[in-house]
Amino acid sequence: MSLQLVEVHVPPTHLEFFRDQLNSYTYESCWVEIQTDGRSLFRILSKKGNVEDILNDLEGISQSVKGFETVLFPVRAYFSNETIKAEKKEEQNVKLQRLSRHELLASIKKNSKTTWNYLLLIILSAIVATVGFLKDSEAVVIGAMVIAPMIGPVIAVAFSSVLGDYKVLTKSLITSLLGVVIVVAISILFVLFSSLELTTNQYLSRTVVTPIDIILGVASGAAGALAFINRLSGNLVGVMVAVALLPPSVALGISIGSMEWDLAYGAFLLVTVNIMSILLAAVIIFSISGIRPVQWREVQRANVSRPLSILFVSVIVVVLALLIFISEGTFNL
Image (tube, rainbow, N blue to C red; front, side, top):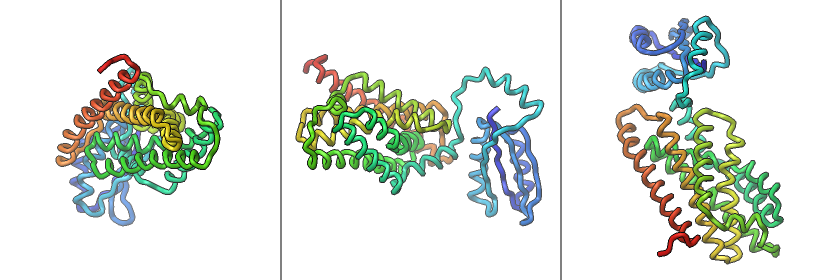
């Protein structure tokens, strides 16, 4: 059984009010103690699937009551006669599991910011990847993808668009685009100051886009979204997303620096296809996972933003797919 512990610090003036509210919550167990400052500390043990409803209610109360505070803790283990029996029933539950909206939103706000850590890792990964391209070393390119922090901002774009949080969406877009621009710029500089041959397999393979790349992007986006909402280890998933974003961006920079415009077009198309495919998959995963705001204005924004996001990205993916088929000669205009 997956459980979390909600600690609620309730001032004396709202003690009876909160006891009534407590009756409306679904939880496994609850303990109460009086603190030295006069407030009552309620420890509410609840399943992860029920925690979000509790937090939504507590969030509204905290905004209007001074001294009313809430803290969420993970629970590593909890045993009782009831939980052991319940675990056997939960084995048949195939519902898509996820963290609460509050936990996810806190992580998204962190990933949407352009920090020095992010910039330095992008610069280092771009340098390593470009060297790997010039030396035609697959191992070096893979090493660059391991350190590239490109998954966070892209997932943040999808998540904030589902919630209709345009402030976070703007920050995430800027951070994502800045990362790609830095990679392209460093690749251009390498070409301008390098006399190496630009006919390596690592480079040329990223200047050609095929319909299978759309599948790669969708799979990467879905994996990244699922890892995020379950707080799974992001290292391997991050590499998968970096596969779709970092090498094509490096190829685009190398093509621009060497003024190979046909190859630059292919690399640019590949970068765009991968980004849009990742966003489409992530938006769909976040939507079907049931992530929704609770405040009326936020709900209204999300109801508009969510379908528009899916429609907008889907149209772009379809247009890009048509361009790929046309470039391959499948369709003739």
